[in-house]
Length: 597
Ligand code: C2E
Ligand code: MG
Ligand code: MG
Image (cartoon, rainbow, N blue to C red; front, top):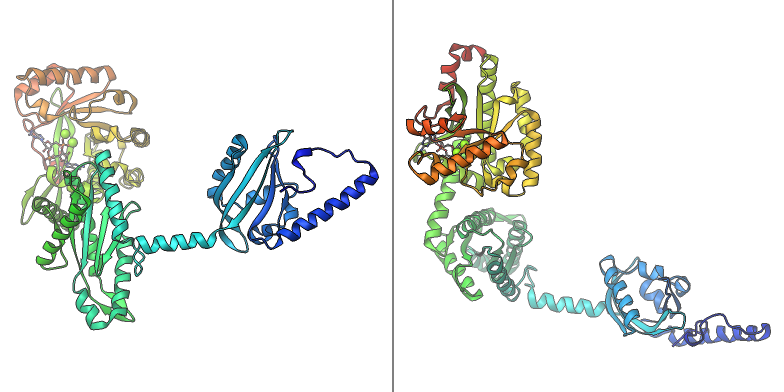
């Protein structure tokens, strides 16, 4: 169908005489009216659309449906189609343009479902189809129709909701969950990631439901669903299997299965705590805790059903252990995670009650003159006895406690330096800064604040960081290091040689020092390969102008070897054991320290 004013076969100005022109105009107007009458009550829009070679487009004819469906009077697009394009949903605009261009290029029919936004009617779905034809001047002209398919789309969405979502809580149902677990299994196997499946069952729900009636039960389930959903990340899925059973799929949880188990354990504990809070329904409070069973994957060739079964078994184990508990499918994971959680709790308590003490181990230069010392945390737990930093620092790092812990050491370090500097002692203090602490958003500001508060010259501070920090996102690391270096702080790479040993970054970072890891120092001068490594480190450092400390020096032979090969500083039991910071300070300041405070 064509409009009388835009005949594709005879495009261009017509050559009629004045009289003929007048009659042609009358004829055209009549034909247009007829077309409008004929198409007025047709559902949807019948139209002719024209795209010129220069990219401009117009709609020479559109039935009145254009006003109903898109809120645009047909006259408004007769010379310029832009108002029509403007109402295509922004997320569909690109697809829309591409489909028109493709149809123009191939002269294949245009066929597209797209969304439109009509101010008076909100979001609608439309389905357009049209047949293209090329004109002599290179334009393309389409004839076709657009129908409103909003109702059909809503019905489809509703069907999908019914098929894949739980009608009561709106959460994904078993079918969708199964699909998601299958995807997660495939993706974790492909990317070397881990994930976890948590089976959550409300304790005592059945009794509550029977005693209080289903409407209270339903509201409780909805509230439980809302609490679970709030706690999860975007990639996680929480589904309702039916009754009072929920399943959480958490991915990705990193490459290490044991670390993934710890994260899943922490998440389960958080969910358990959320469900243990009373539910308030109609002004009455109900107690209804939850038991959580966990399984992690991938462990082997397990299927979706295997995982659901494992998490279910673990959940029954949690219930059997006394409800309101968390249990793992694998017993070894259970004890490891429980021990970590217990350690974390004890550490939190120690931090709050002053149970952590800062010690310091002296560092000497090659001539035996004292340079300063390294601050090391000590934790003497009333039940556990002394706990090694090698055990509690990773727990602090995982749980985020490292921020408070690191802050404690930094604060003590600055206070100690202030005393030393006031007494005219130019000793330096090295402080271990963990990756999470270094990356914490408030770290630089905190260092600045402490320097200001204590009036310390930052040149007395050396931050020890590990190689891992430099490898992950090293651009950001460098930027942050530069900020701190600008304040006067110096950087040292701790345990050097045990990390990735890419020497490329050494040149690019504002470093001051390398600390040769004590595992290499331990076997010099006897082990030829350790001798070679230590010599190589010293030679690289010499070329780059870096200061070098040998750590873990226990024997005179080690010390002699290091000194002979140009190592600038030494630290180890041969010279001094770590001792409480206050004792160490007192020895260096005598009564001055007490007087100054
Ligand atoms: P590190 O920074 O490499 O600290 C040196 C470790 O070597 C200390 O262990 C120290 O006690 C030990 N050491 C010193 N001299 C000798 C020696 O002659 N022989 C032997 N065998 N060992 C020696 P420590 O105190 O157990 O600390 C272990 C690790 O825990 C530290 O390694 C550090 O990475 C971390 N750490 C300790 N305190 C802190 C802290 O305040 N913050 C952070 N982020 N990490 C800390
Ligand atoms: Mg260190
Ligand atoms: Mg070290």
